[in-house]
Amino acid sequence: MLKASPVPRYYQLREIIREKIISGQWSEGDAIPSERELGEQYGLSRMTVRQSLMELVKEGFLYREQGRGTFVARPKITQQLSKLTGFTEDMQARAQRSTTKVLKQEMWAADESIAEKLRIKPGQLLFKVQRLRLANEEPLALETALIFFIGCERLLEEDLERTSLYYLLENKYGVPPLEAEQELEASLAREDEARLLQVKVGGPVLLIRRTTYTERNQPFEYATSVYRGDKYRFYSRLSRERI
Amino acid sequence: MLKASPVPRYYQLREIIREKIISGQWSEGDAIPSERELGEQYGLSRMTVRQSLMELVKEGFLYREQGRGTFVARPKITQQLSKLTGFTEDMQARAQRSTTKVLKQEMWAADESIAEKLRIKPGQLLFKVQRLRLANEEPLALETALIFFIGCERLLEEDLERTSLYYLLENKYGVPPLEAEQELEASLAREDEARLLQVKVGGPVLLIRRTTYTERNQPFEYATSVYRGDKYRFYSRLSRERI
DNA sequence: CGCTAGAATTGGTATAGACAACTACATAAC
DNA sequence: GTTATGTAGTTGTCTATACCAATTCTAGCG
Image (cartoon, rainbow over all chains, first blue to last red):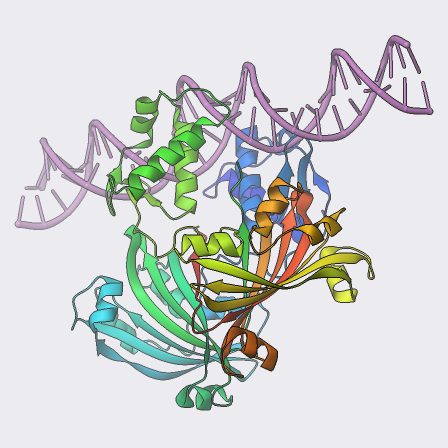
């Protein structure tokens, strides 16, 4: 019987089930208990159980078939890939040791194109940080982030080699990254990028441009990253509209 | 008042709202009517309205804020990007004229690695089709698909230059593509790829590997595509887990 | 033994209502 | 003027119930 607490019951049940799948207690192809059974077992109504299950389906842990039941899906190469994460969290998920070298950390006047993306006026001062990202001591990506919110100049004082930018934004500055749109493109390493990433000029790189939104659908970050093509892959999961 | 019909009410309401947004009747940043209002207006319970809204939030048309209301999100560069589509549909969405040239269309014995991906036995015969994809008469991608299901050899007779493979699978063969996992990587054009895509050897290309699933989470297709890096971009939308 | 009709079970849709958490705004108290 | 406080309105969580649709199981029949 799940108890009332600050964390919602459907959330608790979802994590319980997720844990059973990850631990292998329930494995691929297994039918899990029916909605009605789970409800009885944990003292929840069927609709609450359903909410837990639907979210796990969306994340790719389960799949359901009307009339048959709910089943554990094939373990995914990478679970959860439409999740918005910063580099640090991303590397943790991939079980890589990540380090960071800050190359630039300064204020910068917005040009037309950035101003349009962040919905501010050209010339407005924004915070710019350029960082080299390493995984297991090897250069992996070169990342440039442009950030604007009221008081963003305080970021000049932060140690961005030891602290996650997204952590600070969420917990210290009240600008939680909630959603993002990104665009990926294959390209070739330019001379400066090649030197920093320790690859050949003209080597394959993955270019990622990201606009990040906080509350009220307000854009606050525009970041471009150059990833080494030989070391980084991007996963995604697609699903087709039914009916 | 929405009427009962084969198509669920929450689905009908969802499309009504989507239409209002697309047509501009409700525009960016507008608060839409509250859940209770919509319920009253269309004769639906609040929970049913909620289901419609939650799906539109998931798709990026709306965003919600507890205590404030539900709002129209910024029109997205590309709506709906975790949608599973074939090349033909993809190009239609981007308003490009697409044509196809079939290079190979044959049966092929599965090797170890494919067998593992499609969960069949090595040596099993599967259908292989290699196609050159063009957008506006220019080569865009080189795509190789390996497909297995009972009776897949019937695909040898199909005209895959004029008919969409996904359309046939869904409507003629009863193998609807429902979900997929894909992996993207930046790479360089090899000699044969360069010739077909009309780019330089060593030019940037985007490598996409996709495993497609049908009912019962059964994999039936493994496809690799090589896209011209200078002509194709991949969009995705990320969102952060709350709590 | 094989087949069929019906029962049981499962997920899908839908309703009505309750309380909690949060926001915005007006009003009262200081 | 500024700060509490209350109030109404919003989404978030949760319950209990009902019926529908698809599938599977089972008992009975031929």
